Length: 329
Image 1: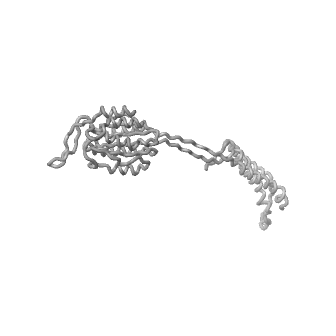
Image 2 (image 1 turned 30 degrees about the vertical axis):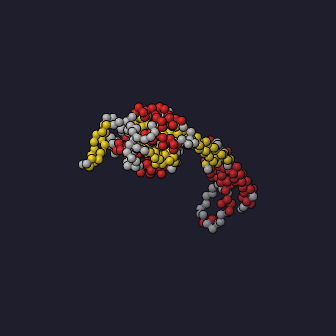
Image 3 (image 1 turned 135 degrees about the vertical axis):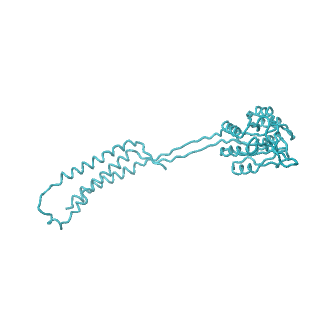
């Protein structure tokens, strides 16, 4: 609960208080007569009248009355602020390629680890959205269904590694599995982020067939081709142990662009980790969660208490002046 004043300018009237006090002190000095005597010895045993102690009390009450009246005129109010927040979240499935080619080291430390790091950062910034993860190689499966529990999703992303699936690149399977996981969502906006570094060479479903399915359910697909231009260093197991070899980067950009265009999304090419981060930031800006905030303020008048106290002090002063102080010696 907060306290405010509707007319705070009335507090300037408190400047009258020092003037009142100064005037009262000056007046008291004028009322005191002076008498020159040779010694105060005769007054040393005299007792002060009770009136001496009480004679300033009415003035104190008058000052308090003035302060309370000015406070009441300033209209103190107590306020209660209530906020009603309505969120219209976006459901997002990330479909991540974990084929062997994602070990390429043109991203540090490799494509997969870079993709995981950027995806985790993206997820951490979208607290109002349900998100999930599909991984694919020669086949696909759901690593995490749509959830608002982002901590669990992040842990499951961190657990993703090579060798979880048979090697290969089944882009159509990765996309169709993501579609099946998000199509029944009640969210007004449904999005799939498909990230791959290769060409579709496995799977029973063609990528464009999966894209048609996504379009049918009103799902936008943002496609990201991951890999530098030309060649990239890739660790390869040989009879002499693991060795790094330069391998040609092959990404079916035309098909990825067609998937994005067909579903109302957009195709991006990430040639390094910083570029991948910029792509996720752009998607984040394009897919903003709608948050509607309504604020209600309830005000209650509090000036009555101050006015009643001022009246009580004023009446006390009047009573003291006309009863107790008049009768005291």
